Image (cartoon, rainbow, N blue to C red; front, side):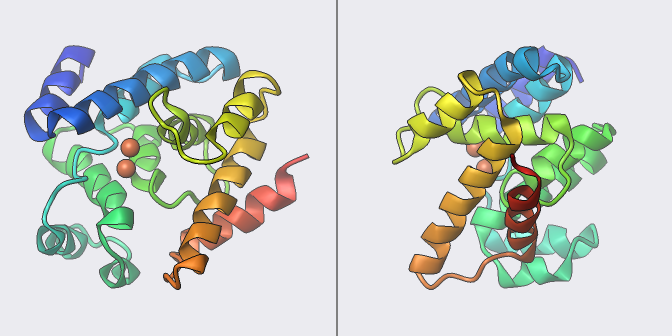
Length: 189
Ligand SMILES: [Fe+2]
Ligand SMILES: [Fe+2]
């Protein structure tokens, strides 16, 4: 799929605010691909499409989990986690995006996982630090990326922040997120 088609696909599906966020994620991811020697093409496509299912009905997402035989544990989680995996399988099955790394990047942007590929990590981080993000601590993550150029540490710090937020709100943590935290705690320097 070329950039124009991907942009049209996202633009037609998403509310304007979400589309603009997706564009900023794609642009941030391309910028990061330059720094970390990632694949600009994959980063752009995964970035523009990562939130394709963000605003879908939860019941519809559950149908896709079953139809495409995704992890059945997903049925105990909500849109926050599900919109990644559901967008990934829909891109693959309905829009012909076959690339494994784009698939994984879209799939895991909501949860992280252990042993993410380079471009997958770029999308995970770009989603968190795109220029309009203003959550507490985001400038520290930007500094880890643009000053220290330490992608694994950024993945760790983002996962830690996400997990602390979930736990302090008595929320259930999706197992891939726990695996992500443990793995990047081990590999970060
Ligand atoms: Fe998302
Ligand atoms: Fe996003």
